[in-house]
Image 1 (cartoon, rainbow over the protein chains, first blue to last red):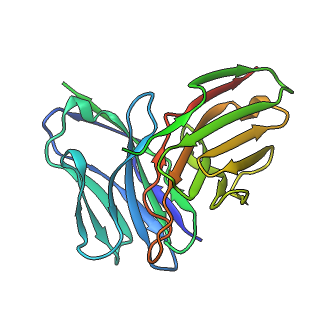
Image 2 (cartoon, rainbow over the protein chains, first blue to last red):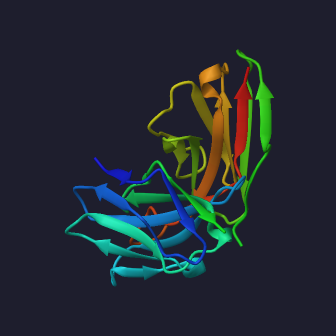
Length: 113
Length: 117
């Protein structure tokens, strides 16, 4: 069975500092990996996804993530955060062949001035 | 832009009431999903549908049912609401790929925050 672990429930960081949100997954098959962002009082929207190819994936708003198969990780990074990046971030995994996507518990990113 | 709309942003119901949550998407997507979101638990799949009149149970279907009579509309029904169903409910849709990845990007509605008193 697939599962997703987001290692930090909350990450406070100062504006313009770099940030890394950690995600580990477990799966017995090839996986497809996603990061979604949820701004306050909104639904989720896709930040980036890894389906195949280059292990470094670039997404919207300056975020990127690296797929590491040996460490079963898909950590999200941004070199310099803004106040507007304050949101909840969800890592998700699917096997591509079915219909189910498994979501992590979420990481709340607080960007402080 | 893909648009997924949900009938209410906030809803307050009493225990035992029948509750309908409606979701409509305008991008002709085959797949539609209902999740509930609770703090510390992330999103948990209640039901999904991959075609009109088709439905499959997700991870937590107990106490819920769904209806998909038209491609663009997917309804979640709480037959007899209980306080433990107080939660944020998110609807999502995704296209079915002809080949390759079936489970690709999901497009979410804004959510319905349901409170059951």
